[in-house]
Length: 325
Image (tube, rainbow, N blue to C red; front, side, top):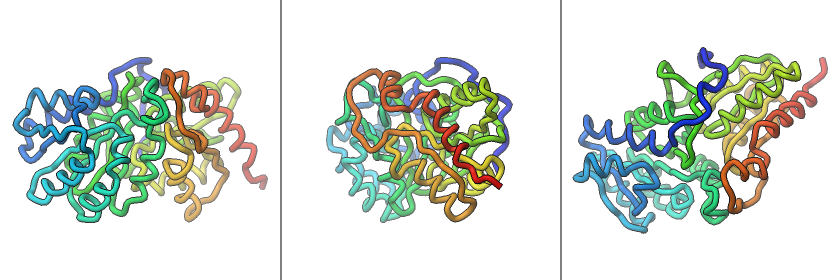
């Protein structure tokens, strides 16, 4: 069961990007584990792996713009005892999903797929570059663990946990500076959600950039006398079913929030867990079955209904659907 944090609100309003936090911790871990090798698709400056390229050029493989080959190569390297870290933009991971499925997951290889530029966080690059389907696609692959950390501190801890984990992993990072949620006392465990804020009226379960927005939403709700619980569900697969069920029992209504299509991602995982444990009203905050468009990330989040006021409104809708006993 997840422990409650001593920091129920944002520690800061700005921070490092998740990709940079990942890249720095990866380079440090490579100092101590000679099995780790990084595969890059000609975008190290955009994924944070420029830190690994500078510190460990002998274990940095430039694959060029050939993501399918890179993914298959990772499977081969893992078969020989290396721990390959495949890095590219999330949308290009979708391009190589067949190789991720067969060469990595089906073959049960210990390879890590780290995707930067997920969701609307891509911003001005527009709909063709905004991966709003990646969590759903990789969650559907048997044996694939799927993770989306919330802030730079958690990203660094998750990077360490992912590389210590034996098995295929898909993990999102992020392009934009991220608000700081945790302090250095935070502990990350694959498969466990983290209760950030207690509440009795409704639970908001979020991942990635939506965690900070959910904390903001909880503050908006508190001003109206609504006590909202906030859970950071950084591991989408395997989801923390026990914590999801506990929140359903104790608050009776749930909202999920993700920078992703509402179909098949965190919301789908939460709903699937609830159906077999403790069904309750659920509202989904995410992109509603649409492609993205060009714009700054914050403006896009507002346009597509992913910001704190929309999360707060979803919480009210979920509460209105509670069973009357």
